[in-house]
Amino acid sequence: MKQIDVQKDILSSNEATASENSTLFSQKGIYVLNLMSSPGAGKTTLLERTIVLLKDTLSLGVIEGDIATSYDADRISAHGVPVTQINTGGACHLDSSMIKNALSTFDLDVLDLLIIENVGNLVCPAEFNLGEDAKVMVLSVTEGEDKPLKYPLMFRLSRALIINKVDLLPYTNCSLEKIIEDATSLNPDLSIFETSCTHMTGLNAWKAWLEKEIHTKRTRSIADG
Amino acid sequence: MKQIDVQKDILSSNEATASENSTLFSQKGIYVLNLMSSPGAGKTTLLERTIVLLKDTLSLGVIEGDIATSYDADRISAHGVPVTQINTGGACHLDSSMIKNALSTFDLDVLDLLIIENVGNLVCPAEFNLGEDAKVMVLSVTEGEDKPLKYPLMFRLSRALIINKVDLLPYTNCSLEKIIEDATSLNPDLSIFETSCTHMTGLNAWKAWLEKEIHTKRTRSIADG
Image (spheres, rainbow over the protein chains, first blue to last red):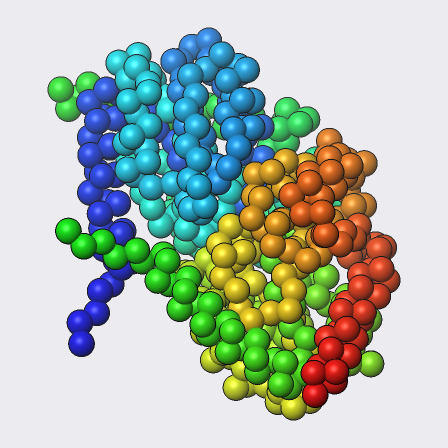
């Protein structure tokens, strides 16, 4: 009997295209974020706040991944930033070939920062590299303190964790300390930010982290010639 | 060139086993719920409240689906109800063969109600029938009012929608009316309950719906001989 390992095959094909995307991003000097979370953790609102903070100093682009609808893309578009919508038509994550196809809709020569908002899902998006510089995950405190240990892969692979909706902490039984303790035990190098995108708190530290990341990539690219 | 439609093949194989499960549930007179939501919408707490409301009059069993850990199963077990944990090891949903395998851990001759808590995910769990009598989804108000239109399949296929964490409504910009309007437009037959599992509100209507469902299946089984 022969067995075809479909999942392994899909992932290795995804890695090859992710690597092509990554090379192209480096050539063009574009820093790329892959933003992931549960449905409703606040990715799009964080993205809107980030755009307002950065759009005067950086050239931004956004790719919006959704199962259906273009609501999020419409919200981003209102900020005057180029945005491309990918509707996965049922697939629960973005993959690197979807990103490759979407890149033709941008002027890559002028972009500094491309933010990809993945499909709302704590599982599969972590398994599919897109060619990004960093995975960043958003966790809202209303989801509960047990999420790092229940969805460990996403916490392990992320460079930064944004703990969002902290304004709701007084009304929940969620322990911020427990989230931070478990997330850090899974990933000691994780940069953690506590934000409320409705109350506009904690966003300057996130902005500073992102600017430093972009600067570091740029410096490295210049050093590499 | 030959093309193998993997997804179609997987789904049709899943349907066959789901149908076997469903036949077995009918033979044994067991009513089966498939409980689905985003991570952190409150499925496990709702399940705990439901157990307390029903365990004196019905014989209950629970299957807990998770990527990793047995935290939810431990919480259920503390209520003295038989519970079996399925760790999917990375898969973002339960399928019918996982359920079939788990059934051997229960005494099916005594069960009245089996509740399956699916993996926290608004996408794939809806596509995989398990042999259940009803899919029920839990949506917390903190996830936002745009979820029905962004994840339409789950709302279309569910028999009941539990809008949870309504105690947090005053602190969010979520419109309960918009959720209900969009969910009902996708699925006019949807039964909708507004609950707070921490403040213990709205649970009696949910209990009454569930008891009626179980009674209807039982009456039908007797009529069918």
